[in-house]
Amino acid sequence: MKKKVTIAFVGVAHIHTPGFIALLKSRNDVKGKIYLGSRFPPRAEKRAHEIGAAVASDLRQVWADPEIAAVVICSETNRHHDLVMAAAKAGKHMFVEKPLGITGKESVAMAEAIENAKVRFTTGYFSARIRSICFSKIKSHGAILEDHARARIELSRGFPGGLV
Image (cartoon, rainbow, N blue to C red):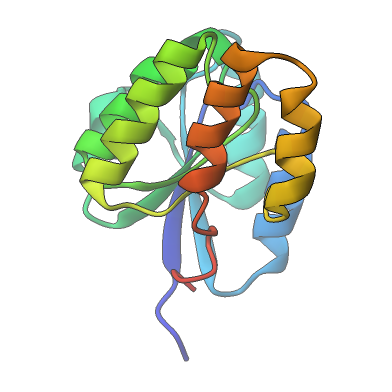
């Protein structure tokens, strides 16, 4: 049997978190941990209980834990930049719920950190693997969003495909 991959949820605020928890529970090759990144602690406790995980009281526990191969960042969008930068620095593969960042400049900085860290990355973007669809949707929204999305799409390498 394959070794289980450990994934930490960093924040559980996003509306799709319950679906991600259900998916994690359906797999026997992945186990989860929860970081208490929610501004509403009972929400983190609830999600941790659903997957039989402990809640980390300090984010540094996640970055320093060698068992954690990847993180699912489902925090509030205004926290993404700091979390992505820390995850990249810690060498953690990541899935970041959309939108990636508040500005195109933030998103490009995150993309560079991810690329330099050589970690696997993807973001929750519909049809993210169909480049032509993404660019046609994004170009209609203007240059700032185009730069933001280009960083996301060009670095999208799949997650957790190569990990499990």
